[in-house]
Amino acid sequence: MKLISSGDIQYKKPLLNEFIVVYNDKLANILVNNFSMKYLSSAAINRLEAETKLYEFLEKYIQISELLDSDIEIYVQISKEDQILYELLNKKYGKRIIGKRDYYFLKSKLLFFPKLIILLFINLLFSIISRLKDIKEKEYDYVVRTYFDHRSIDEDECLRDEYFGDLINDLKRNGKLLVVYKMIRRSDFVKFLKTKSCGFDAVSLEYFLSFFKTLNAFKSFLYSRIILNEKFIYKNYDCTELLQLFINKDYLTFRGLDVFIEKEIAIKLFDLNPKTILFPYENQTWEKMYPYVKDILKSDTKITGYQHTGVSYKLLNYFPSKIEKHLPIFPDKIATVGIIINNLLLEQANYPSEIVVGGALRFKKHFLKSKSNIEISYPNKKINKKIVYAFSYDLKKYNGILNLLIDIFGNTEINVLLKFHPDYIECDILKSFKKELPKNFMAYGAFKWDEIFPIVDLVLYDDNSIAFEGMIHGVKTFSVAETEKIYDITRKFYFNEWKENLNKNDLISIKNQLIDETFDKEFEVKKIQKYINNYFTEFNYEDYFTKFI
Image 1 (tube, rainbow, N blue to C red):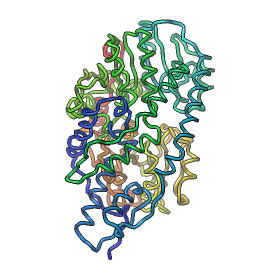
Image 2: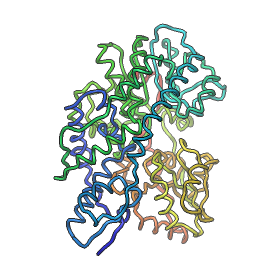
Image 3: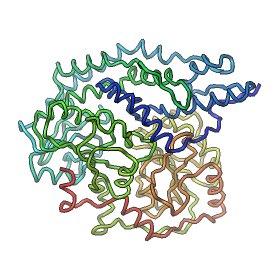
Image 4: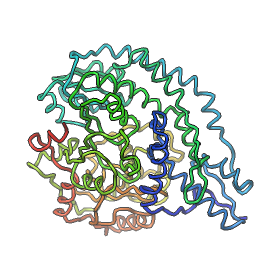
């Protein structure tokens, strides 16, 4: 008997083509063959991998099956993170699969209706409270659908927008503007109501939800459960049951509810007869409601999605399949942050939309020193024996990343600064860790990045845009590929100035170089400056305003 934990298996990372073409096409085909609201509301069917991780578990299921088929002496202990695979593999391989049921789906079913009622009450309550901020016009030239958090208030205590930045000022100068905010945290609702808007109207998303609109959205969601009526075969394995599990999870965790709510809101926004509706674009399921409703209403309103930050291949939603290209679920125009992402989408994604460079609206601060280029700071040669890890949006990876960092850097003379994703509360994350942090590990949430870059020797990250911020400040940044067993999380496309994706051995080598003070912090500033300015284009009114409208 050879016992191995599913968490310790050295999975083969699939070829990129298998992910963004083969897998992508198979799920897109299901969407096309069953095109409807309920299929549009499924995160799994629409390939929101950051939420579902369907592809990761699909590959694990197949590779574990291949491992067991190759040697009858092998037994696999299913780790907690792979729990969703236990019953399927146990059904197939019996006693060779070790673990236990966690009754996740049973618990979810029992709690489904109580949670649904609570969510209905919350939405009705917020739709009433939202009336405290009202709109002044019956029609608007421009409508921006965006998000509200602490970054949405400027130094004058007025509303701003984190995603569209100065474009908001240009829009309000050119016509009547309405900005519709969705709260990232419900607890910010009162803060939003108390904050004045300057030169434009602003309401919360719930403002457009009447009692009957809310009921209609919830009723539609309630009847949106999907039962697959065709087999899902991948790499010659029947994975229908696995896909059905993920579709069930979408439904039982209410992932699709926002899509039905957004549809009702989209109808109301089109009633305002805007010339253009704009929103931060990631090809999320809720975003598809605007072109979907536009098609139903036969509206002349233009829809612009703004690709506002960096992307990675893991975010497969950015790379639609050619099979779904004809569906009415894409904006008329996608404005990108710069040439590199613009070219990437033209080469790898299958959009019917016009794709244009719109400018890096969220990177304005980096253009202030120069008229048209981001200036790159020269590296500081001094070794400080400090590194920082920038965590991504994926909370489920945090414990694994921490274990990796502790294994390599724990109790050494290197200080490891931990910077968690800004959407999460630091103290809550620290409480969730299973291990006590070594003395040389420090949570650095209270410090701004501008304070961190000057004191660290390098930045480690996974799947977030700090990769570029670090280089701008003269610090080398590295993606830790070891954090992803299946996905390609490259952010620096077309980059070859140094090895970008590090494995465990690379990290050990860097540790030794930092201790010996031989780590090379230098790079060719002119080459990095050229790369960064191809990635991020400065927005100016004369050249780029019309790209958005």
